[in-house]
Image (cartoon, rainbow, N blue to C red; front, top):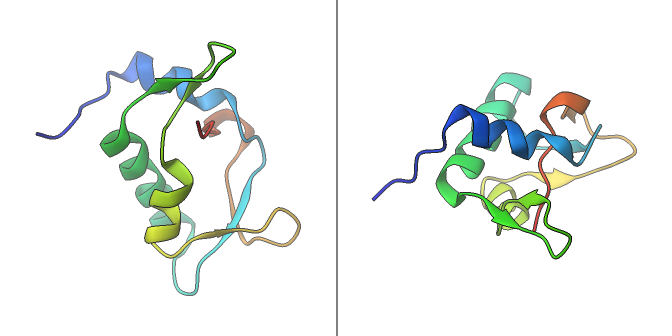
Length: 87
């Protein structure tokens, strides 16, 4: 069964990892955002110890799709308004 996140719940997820940068051998920015959305949608929402929203397994999901975080030189960028906290 596929998990569906209401828009308001997805909005809660957009508060972390501001300005995160990723690399992928072939993905462009559009594909990156699509893959990122699929990870959030498929994994669902959890809570960190501080009560903030997060996505358990987000980093592993992105890695499984071929992405690696590269904070200094990544060409695929998560803007400040759509960040996701990993649990």
